[in-house]
Length: 296
Image (cartoon, helix red, strand yellow):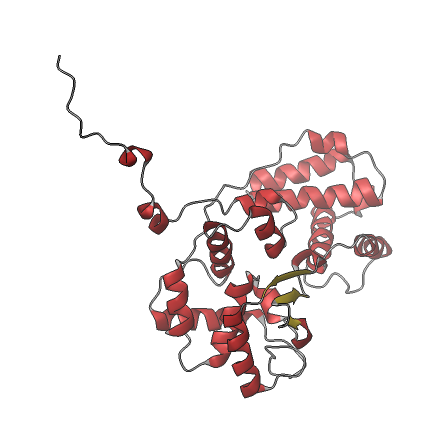
C-alpha cells in the first residue's frame, strides 16, 4: 500500500490515529495499516467484519503459501494484535498464542577491521570532503543511514563532544559520540560548504540528502579503497559497535549509544572477528609443557 492516507475509510483513519497517538514511528504506522489493508483485500471485506478463523487462515496463507520471511510474519502478528486487540478491543490473544512466532536466523554482523575503516575514510574519500565527513559521522557515531542523513547543525555539541541523534528509529532521541577526529573533519567540511540547516543537504538546501545518495557515497569509497563489501553502509554501524566492545566499553553504554531498546540486540555484537581471533592465545598456550613425560 503506497499511501495509507489516500482516501482512507473512517476505520482506517481511526487506526492511523490510534497508532500515532501511541507514539508509533511513521514507518510502523504505515506497516501496520498496510497489513490490515492486505488482510481486508484478501477477503474483500472490511476487517472489522472478519472472524478470528478468517485471521488464522490469512496468517496460514502468509506462512505456508506465500512463504513470507520470519520478520514479515512477526510484523503481521503485531499488526493484528494492535488492530483487533487494542483498537477494536477484541480478545485476540487466544488465537495469537496458538501461533508460534518464527525466529529470525541469528547472523553474525559483518564488520570491517579498524585498519579497513581507516583506509575507507582516507584512501576511499581522498579529494571528497563531503564523503569523508558523511562516512565519519556514520562510523564515528554508530548511526543508521537515515539518522546520518538527517543530522542538523544544531545537533552538534562540540564543547561536550556529543551528537544529538534527532531523527532516530522509533522516535527515541539519544546522544552519541563526537570525537576530536570527527570534529576536525566536520569543521573543515563546514568551512567549505556552509550548510544552513541539515549538515548534509540535498539538492534543496533545506532538505537532507536522500538515503540513496548516502549509500552511493559509501559504495564509491569502498570501491576507491578496494575493500570488500560487507553488506552496505549499515556495516559501519556494526563495526562501530564491535570496535567499542573490543576496546572495553561496557555493553550497557554501547546499548545507549546505538539506541537499542533491548540489551539482547546489543549482545548480538559480542562475536569475535577473525582478525581478533588470530591475536588471542589459548590458555593451553600459556602452560609450560616442556617437562619430560613420566616414565611408564
